[in-house]
Length: 86
Length: 303
Image (cartoon, rainbow over all chains, first blue to last red; front, side):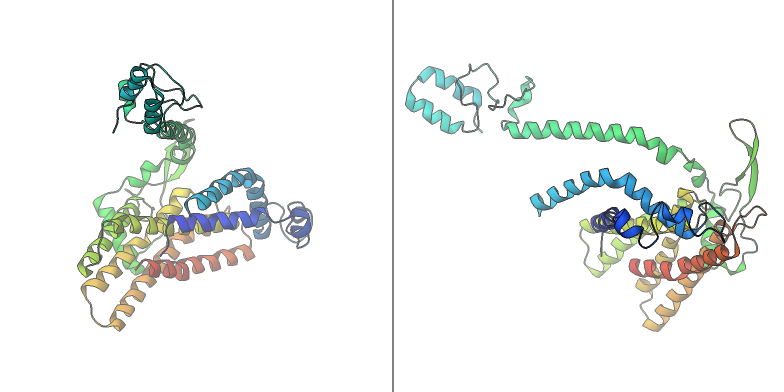
């Protein structure tokens, strides 16, 4: 039905989508910014990372900072591959 | 296939414009300038350095030699990268303990996956051992001593057996071709990667400490159920109702087995758990969601 190639492409698309989310135009607006979720709204819950939302926010910001530069390289390789070999 | 040396030799013997044009047409890809015939004629204008070894007649096309060198350097770089990063993935955890199984363990575990209703205790056994600093710590017992410990032997065997059974059954139906083995292998590998990725991300989100190979092992236990269903489907080609009932029963057993096994991963029963009540509820919900619908979906994709 689908193989490693499809899985790789779909993972690449999802990671690209996460990477192009704008920090100050979008994530901060909906409260998922990497600086916002830590400071606000912690009166009722224990501080730290045990909140699901804060872990998700951390995951998103971590993937963005880590994978921005390798994503450029991988995207270029995939684009060249698709152009040359169809 | 012409011999480049003989043409270069002809250029110096005949020394006429007509012959030069002729041999330039013949050597349309060779050097444009007059070189001595003993010199290696496989130069382009770019001056790619060649190996002056006797077998350079094989690549009379300089682009092929450039491709060969590029691929060699790429392979070297890949090997270098693997050697640098191999230790972080493989040797960080001792995966040999996952393969320490015995016959009785394997039989008992297979029986547990298919009929998990008669097991008494599901908690893993602790075993005190000494680590590097000679402190005695509590580690989990290997599969040899504990039926509830996850192992990697059954998933690996299940994966290979699934590929072989798929090939056999498609051969019985008459639609086998040798690439089918590769297609099935990569397809099931992709599904396995998806499953492990989903479970790992979900466990991280729920702030559960989990080891990577444990996750791989738990996700690979569904091969057993899928194999049994596939065997039933192809051997007893009875009515569809019986087949559906049987597959639902086997997959329900798989879900039950996974729920019981993963319960102690997600909801630690010790006294030092830091989860709140809301977290517990969320983890239980996730446990149920993972064990039944997702495994059902993935198993249905594989049948």
